[in-house]
Structure formats: structure tokens, C-alpha cells
Amino acid sequence: MRIAYYPGCTLKTTAKNFETSAIAIAQQLGVEFVELPRWTCCGTVFSLTSDDLIHHVAPIRNLIRVQEMVKRKQVDDEKRILTLCSMCFNTLKRSNLRVKENIEDLKKINNLMYLEEDYCAEIEVIHLLQLLKEIGFDKIKAKVKNPLNNLKVAPYYGCMILRPLEVGIDDPEDPTIQRDLLEALGAEVIDNPYKKVCCGSYQTVNNKEKVAELAFDILTHAQREGAEAITTCCPLCSFNLDFRQKEVLKKHPDFKQIPVFYITQLIAVAFGLDNKTLGFDQNYVDPKLLLKNKGLIK
Amino acid sequence: MEEKNNIMERIAEANRPVTTGVDEKDIKDWVTIYIMGKGYRVPADLTILTAIEYAGYRLLRSVGCRQGHCGACATVFRRAGEYKLQADLACQTRVEDGMYLVQIPFSPAEKAIYDISKEPYDASVFMKYYPEVARCVSCNTCTKSCPQDLEVMDYVQAAIRGDFELVADNSFDCIQCGLCAIRCPAEIVQYHVAQLGRRMYGRYGLSMPEHLKKRVEEIEQGKFKEAMDNITSKSREELEKMYAERQREPD
Ligand code: SF4
Ligand code: SF4
Ligand code: FES
Image (cartoon, helix red, strand yellow):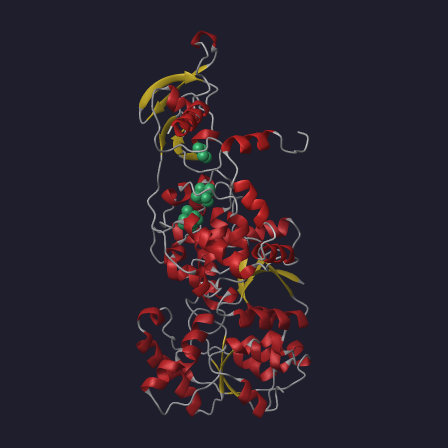
């Protein structure tokens, strides 16, 4: 099945490993991501100002591209666009919702983009985790060649795929989608309440130390419960939990570094896919030793 | 000195408005245009550039090649009865009746200083020198104002994600007229961003073609030295004669 795929800027730069691993596992599951032929930044942060329509132009322009792809028969899924990055997902979905619910806004945006065809507000924005759930964790389990036995993994969700409620893909207080997925891969799941505590998001630009503190809390809570690794599905969460361990270590010399995976990387390991698709060289804390010790990679 | 004057005269001659020497009685179609608000009747088949000169202005800036190559003659205008602000090259656009226009001889823009040999080949180079690219709201105004019909928004977006090839391809025909930059609500200087992208792509993205490498070696070994010395030592008359007698492919 071919589905329109929106990568977003981070997946083309600092999170290439999220993209390569996601494309590879999707292929195993019979899904082909067709990248939007022309796409623009999602807008990064959903604008909450009621009269600030200009920041919804970028997300809606991307949704128009999906309409075009459908017309050109470049995709089989005629109603949906897939995102991997939680932030892109959140921005695209919320802008979409805004114009669906507010026809005046839709008209204004369409008028501003008079060179484009009108957006019909019929496209739906989905996140990869939703697609995986839809495919079925049973089917995913059947593809596992390398069960993640004995690997203690704490899933981390962050905010952008959970909040606000109308956008979230799971219970915002107690999400379970990653747990079910990881169990299908054979991992031992360490569920803990810090899985939905904010990672600090863009504060990471101006206030590294604050974000390092948040990361410290999130990571050490998981470690205390026995976690050996963390999974995320957001490049920004991942950056804050993985790369900020450098700052965590400065402040807390006793802190033990812990690998942070994109969930798709672990799926790829479980599917026995080759190193190229895993892209571990882009992870800050090298996860290879852990995986070698568990006999999961050579 | 005399030689120099001679050249200047030849340039001046070439630059004279096309209507010079045409009797106004013989011109059938006229339009009225408004240059900086003042109305002028000008022959209808002039370009904006020649019309401005016809109206009596002498352009010191806002003009260069007169052939759509140099990007010096940026104009913004409104057509009669239209709310849309248009942008184009004065030397390539014909006047229309009721047009309001002004020349934009220069667009203020800070140009970053960098050494491409010291920069990493990834998106961070754009963020370092032109961080405002991240402010792009995808309004597409730049694309709409580009006289070269480039997909300007797309190349700005490609820069944000470090797609050097797309930046280079989409901006290849940019003539740095500055029209995109003066219209951008995010205050991005698209053409400088693009130039950085093309330079980086040229250095890191493209492989050195074999034939070029070979030729550079030949030059360095002095293969063409004799021929070059021969030609550079010739007098102007000799060079003109050579030029006139040169071998050329039939037109
Ligand atoms: S005009 Fe500026 S903000 Fe609008 S699309 Fe072009 S670069 Fe982006
Ligand atoms: S990209 Fe900008 S500077 Fe370049 S030709 Fe187009 S409008 Fe002019
Ligand atoms: S004068 Fe050079 S492009 Fe118009």
C-alpha cells in the first residue's frame, strides 16, 4: 500500500536514522511511503493565536500536496498523510482540524494561496504509531526474527502525540501503544509515569540546563525501574533525552548514560534488518554495546 | 583616453531607447503610465525601462544589461484596477495602460562572509549564516514575485532541510534582482541563501568531472602557455583582425 508521507525537516537532517529505519520496517509490512513531491516546513509549532492564520498556511499547503498526489494516483491511501515526527504530526493535525472546524479560516487560507488548488479539508493526518497499530501488532510479531528478549525498554511518549485530547492518538494520562508494540517485539516493557512528562521541547535552545534536568528526571526514573533503554517517536524528545545526557553528566557525575532509540530502530533490530537502516551513528549514546550484550546485533 | 571615450560612446549608443529617431507622428499606439505617481504618455510597445527613459529620466542605477541577465532593473507595479502588486524586470516587461510603477535599484541585504572550505555540508550552514530562513511561513510571495519564474519558496524550504541539490537546481537561474527579498514577510534574503547553497553544492555535492581534472592538469603543466602568450602580446588591431577572420560555425 502506498501512502503519502510527510518527512519534515528534522528527518532529513538530525533524525535521518528515524526515517531510514521507519521506511525499512514499513517495507517489511507492505507499506510504501511516498514522499510529498514538494513540501514545506510544517510550521514547527502550532500557532495558538486566534487571528494568526499565516502560520497555518504551511501545514495546509502540505495537505494540498496530498490532494494532488491522490489525483495523480501516486498513492493508494486516498485520504491520509503519514508523519513520523510527533511535532509535525501535531502541527499538521491541529491546523487541519482548525480549518475543518472553521470554514472562514479555510476560505481565507485558500484565498491567500490562490495559485494552489483549494484545500478541501478532507485529508486526515496520522502518525506512524497509528498506522502500525492498524496493521496489527500480531502481524508485526509475525515478522520478528530477533525477539528483543531480556531487553528492558521504557517507552517515552512526550506531549505532541498525546495532547491536546482531540489530536492525541492515545490516552494522554496512560498511553499504552508503544508498550503493546514493544511487547510484540518480545521486549520487557518498563512502564513508568514519567513516560508522558514534557522533555522541555524547544527550551533546549535557550535553556540547556533546564532541559538536562528534565531529562535527568525522566531517564533516572526509568532506570530505577530497571530500564536499559528508552524509546521515543519524536526527534525533539529524542534530542533532549539523548544528546542532553552530555549536560546531565556534567551536573550529575554519577549518572549512567542510557541509549535512546527511535521506536522504529528497535523494530528494525527485531526484524533483523541491516545496520544501514538502523543508523546508530546518529544516536548520541551508542546503543550498540547494549544490543551486542543482548545478542541482538553482531 | 580617446580609446576609452570611443568605448563609452559605443555603449551609450547601444543603450539609447529604441524610439530614438522615430518620428512621434508615426507611432500609432500610446499608453499612459505613472512613474512614481506622475503620468506620462509613452509608445505602447516600449519596455518599462525604455519607457522611463522616453519619459525623460536618465537611469544611473536600475539598469544594466538590458537583456534580462543582470537583475539590475527590478520594478514593482500595479496594473490599472488591480489590487495585486506585481514585480518584474523593467527591461523585459512591456508597459500597459494605467500601470503604476517604481524602480527598485537596490535591495538592502546583509551578505554573510564565510569560507565554504570550513563549513560542514549540512543544513546547519544555513542556520549559521541565514538563521532567518527558519522564519519562512510558506506564503509563496517570493515565488510569485520572481521574474525568473523560479520556485523560490521551494528552494528556501530545501535550504532549511539541507537539500543542497534542490537549492542549487531551483535557484540556478537566479539573477539576484532582490524582488523576492523585498516582498518576503519573514525578511529572508533568498538569493544570498541560494548562493551559499550553490557554492556548498558545487564544492561538496558535485564530483569533479574527469575531463575538467585532466584539463586543469594540462593547464598547470603549461600546455596552453605558448598560445596564451601569443595572443596576449598582440596589439588591438591585430586582435580585431583575428576576430574578424576567426573560424566560426555558420549562423
Ligand atoms: S516570501 Fe519569505 S516567508 Fe514567504 S515563502 Fe518566500 S521565503 Fe517563505
Ligand atoms: S530568486 Fe529572488 S533574487 Fe533571484 S531572480 Fe528570483 S526574485 Fe530575483
Ligand atoms: S537591465 Fe539587466 S536584467 Fe534588466
